[in-house]
Length: 110
Length: 115
Image (cartoon, rainbow over all chains, first blue to last red; front, side, top):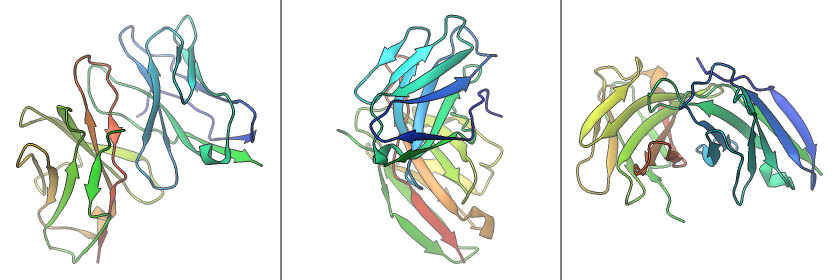
C-alpha cells in the first residue's frame, strides 16, 4: 500500500495557485517524496521531488514540513492543461518501485 | 527533452498468444522498469531491471512474464501466453543512476487488449 494520503479531488480556478497536500507521517529519514501526474491515460509525468528542503523547478514548487510528515505541491499559475491526477509517492524501504495510490484528481476550471 | 518511447501504442492479441511490448529508454539511463494500469485502477509496479538482471519484481510478474534488453537501446516485456486479465496499459520507465534519488521517467504506454 502507498505510504501517503491525499485528498481524492480538488478544484482550482485557472490562473490561481493550486496547492495539493500530501501526508506521509511514516516517512523515514532517507526517503524522498516524489510527485507525478497523469493526464488521461498517458504515462505518469515526473514533476518534482525532495528530501527535506523546499524545491522549485519550472513546473512546480514542493514545500516539505520541518518534521517531514507532510508536503504540499504548488502549481503557481494553474492552466486548464494542469487538469490531471496528481500522485505523491514515497519510496519504500530502499525498494526502487514506485507505489501509486489513487492520487488527487485536480480539475482546473476556466 | 529526451523521452522514453514505447511501441506499439495499441496492441490487440488473441488470448493465449505471446506478445512483446517494446520500449526505448532514455539513452544514458541505466535502470529500467515496467508498470501496468488496468482500466480505472492504480498504476502497479511489475519489474525493475539493472545490469541485465531483474533487481525486483512484484507478485504480478509471474512465469508468464519476462524482460530483456536485447541490444543497447531496447527494453522489452514479453507475456508468454496472454490472458484476458492482462488487458491493461503497460508503461515503461527508466532512470539515470548517478544518485539514488534520481526520478523515474515514463513513456506514454502501450494499450494491450486481449480478445
